[in-house]
Length: 529
Image (cartoon, rainbow, N blue to C red; front, side, top):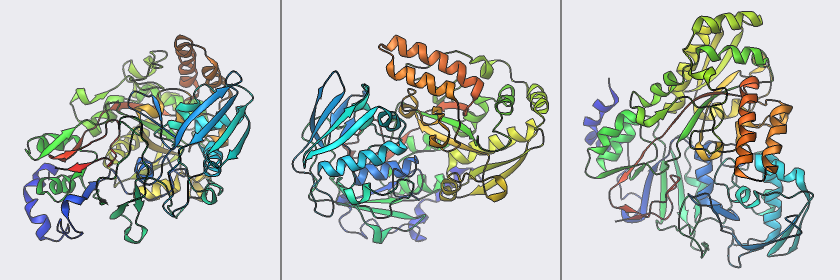
């Protein structure tokens, strides 16, 4: 049965008890019901790059700076900063006013401890740590960084919206190992997380924090400018089935559907009570990430063997259909929206596809028939469809594929395992990241190739790392682009991941919702008309 055919029965959903009445939690005009792209299975944004967790983070924590949709950093918790000694000394001052949800003031001690925890995880932060001589507290509102070498993208790093945002935690939480996810949520953001109402796989609830102190500067955009909790309560409803989610929007049970399945866009666009909107125009990139620690993908020749048969169009059509205005192929190490994108080596993906050439290349490595465990979350539509295409491709090329189906939360837990396949490990997983996360070598999580310090999959390539360091020191945009051309050439030799294409996706919300922030689907600043 086609998903859109299910929409005709939407009127019966409430009667069947699938959704609670809109007034069950009080005045409907003060309650926003939001359908996220997936469940928030991990609450700590420094323990996963999963976007539902990132968005949850922006609801309850805040950052020192926030980037707007034009990539300009603006103050959030910070009041300002001073740069001295030719960029080797930065002094930051916090605003007087922000408090955590437990009533304690946000202090420089909290910021310093949070930056230290963030530097271990984040790609920008790891480079900052290498160049850092000392970070120290001056007083409750001021702290200082002394650098061995200048770090040009300091504000970009502290202001980044994603993967990983530098959220400021209370010091007692920030001092904990980032490898262990925090389970208690105490932020200083516009909403409190209501842990008592969390139902795994079903619901998360946020309550307005009446002592929140928004930044007095900037215009709301991406994560910059004032973050306002105009709703008394925001309920995230986890509805994995796209048709059911769309039906809930049509019936008025839900207010906002974060990511609309492509085949349901025309249906929702015909509804006069629903706005279908491209809030994030930068799009997403799909990638297949191999595990570099164990056979067969520890061998770069095995990774390269897949290239002749890999069709990005096949992957994109599996999630976006034949509407080519919604997707692009011919994508290399960087998204097409990045100034660092180039055509170096791209013919490996754009010349005519040749399955037989891929089979022969794999046989030449001696690894044909090798077992491959492919992590497959069936409750996230795009990941589910892309993984199905990947399983088919790997099988046709000559691998013995084990399609390890599970829910999204299980995938997040399993992909952190470094053990061999026989001990519950994995071989490959589909990954989706927004364009801004991949725009340059400094922040690109999957282009980092520093072994144990790299993102899940743990590639190691001294050549890629050397070029990344050159990019940080490049004095001009043209110089940065030239470094990235050489980096993409090296990328096609090492293949830390297989690029699967780039696509855009729309959001849908009830007509009458105002205050929608551009650049990221965050239910902040929203008012019901």
